[in-house]
Image 1 (cartoon, rainbow, N blue to C red):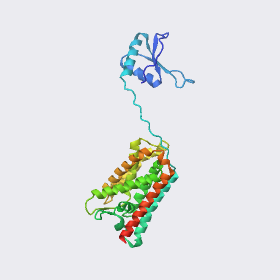
Image 2 (tube, rainbow, N blue to C red):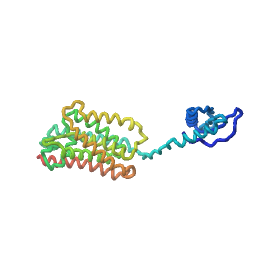
Image 3 (cartoon, one colour):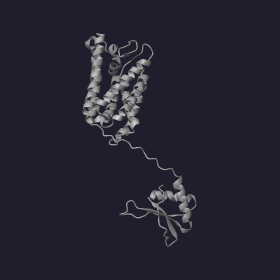
Image 4 (cartoon, rainbow, N blue to C red):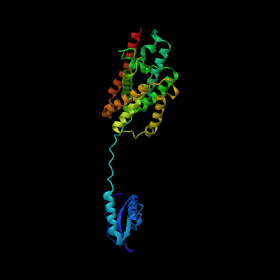
Length: 314
């Protein structure tokens, strides 16, 4: 309730005095305060038409006007002041078409590697050459190549669909280049931590570490900035659904082997990258050269990692 507004001392013909005025809800709240103290009151809802909003006035008998004002003043003094909400940054989303194009490129890379693996291109076993393997030390490129390999069609399709969805959301916030650079960085860092803390003779593959890195990227950025783009409320509504699908993928939905720690490391890495992205919003991310450079680095990193992996296995 707002503090009572100054009102006149005029007494109506039936002996009532106005003790507060304001919005209808404020006067009703004041009325509840008086009713709790046994002070009767009359509420005049105020005028309409040209008055927007109408001013509501609360009247009490002249004999209890002083007591009513005292109660309202005490209530206003004891009531905690409203806490001002921190300003939430306004985000301008990047174009949807570019975001979808980035997701298509991501899916094409995964399916392209799956096709080359199935054909044993270049005469090598692609899984043996590129999967995460703790028995092989010093082959850093496996943290990249393992993200593009999958154990079967279901694994491939699941990571393609979920990863594309996360990629579109991230690209709308950060731009295509910076979004996929962050996702790739989180996936590589997650794989590195997974290999570092994994038991001996441990192996892993799949884009899910990077996918959870993308989910962490979004979470870390919004957590650090408190920003949610108001232009598209579907983002806020769809986040629980996307997170639910991710949790289903994380716990395997019946799959016999799921790299839970890899997912967790990927998510944690994504949160760290998302927090690091916060100072870039929004102006630095609008630099076209930055976006193109980031996209080129992503593609070059995957290509170079596989070139090294193929040459090492030849």
